[in-house]
Amino acid sequence: MAHVTDDDVPGTVAPGAPPQPPPGAVGRGWLGGFVLANFGMQIALQTPSTFLIPQQIAAIDPHGKVVAYAWASAVGAVAGLVAAPLAGALSDRTTGRHGRRRPWMLGGTAASILVLAAMGLADSVWAVSLGALGLSAAMCALGAGLNTVVPDLVPVAERGRVLGWASVPQAAGLALGGVLVGLAPGSLAGYLVLAATLLLVLPFARSTPDRPLPREARQRLSWGLLLDGWRIDPRRTPDFAWALATRFIMYLGYGLGTLYIPYFLSDVVHRKGDLLLVVAVNAAAVVAVAVVSGRLSDRLGARRPLVSAGSVLMAVPALMLAAWPTWTMTLVSSVLLGVGFGVYVGVDLALVTQVLPSRTDSARDLAVAGQMGSLPYVLVPVLAAVIIHYLGGYSGLYVASGLSSLLGAALVWRIRSVR
Image (cartoon, rainbow, N blue to C red; front, side):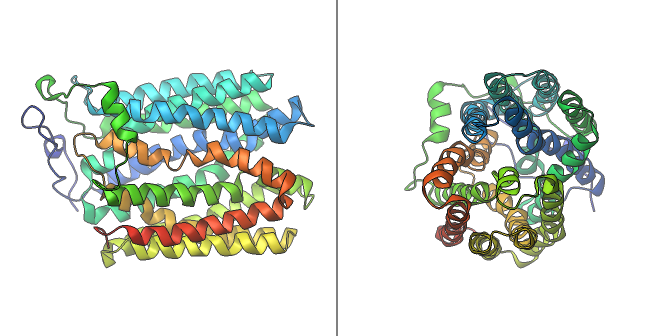
């Protein structure tokens, strides 16, 4: 299998011309570095919202923790709505001898480390929320470099394999992060440990091919261009619009089913100390099937059936947990949800890369697509707080999660240009 070199990186051959398609398969060394870099990012990105932030907020405001946690989660998610497409558009237009993506990987890593260290000192809900905002923005900068190397370098026929492996850190990062912060003596030490994991990004950032963009090929950046990233026209780019809608609905369902697990365990099944076990069981199930799902989609040349099947599988455990909110069913549901999410996440992003509307603005458009996995977390805390308090408690929450996943399973079939 061929290794990608700097000479193989698609570049701009004339002012305003789009990058050329990737020429060949990426090698195992490159893939290994990419997966490790994603481990560093995903551990630092996911762990605070599940383990450290709920713990901090519960200590600061034990009686108002549900609403306070909703605020902190929403603030971080809202920040990404602006930061992600802006960082993506700037990455697409970055010139200089270090390339377009590398400066964003390195800068985003440095900023994330500083924010995580500061979050360990937060002693109020507002301070925690401000930290969540800063971490979201810094991670958007990192993602503007790291996530876009796939459409830059990886051929379509290889993207299921590559992104299937990349979904392993997305699944296992939270469990590993939980173990790491569990071993740390206090919140500050936990945040510093997470900051250290970001060092895994540096070897990949330094070594991955990244051809510089000539200054004469750089397109002008404007507010209109940034807004165009959010002006999704179903008539002009229908498949991209349906892919975004599917992602949004799927992650809304997944967020409703997972974000409040820490409080469900403590308030309903009274197993607060078993959060890491639930996370680990779920992560193991995701990892077990995500890579297989991605490679299978490459071999079949079909993405939609697997996305739809994974979505249906995700709905089943949510509805089961709504009917039987017990400790045993929590573990069973964690496994089934992991299997469904593994099938889904191993294929979903590969599908999205095939319907991006612009090659010259691939980082911006991919950032907007990425926000469809983050934007639901703006709504989830608000919806969850309303459902938990007024519409059936946690059982109502899991019914909503299951119905959302079923809707996502239906929407993916509206995409026509990808099998």
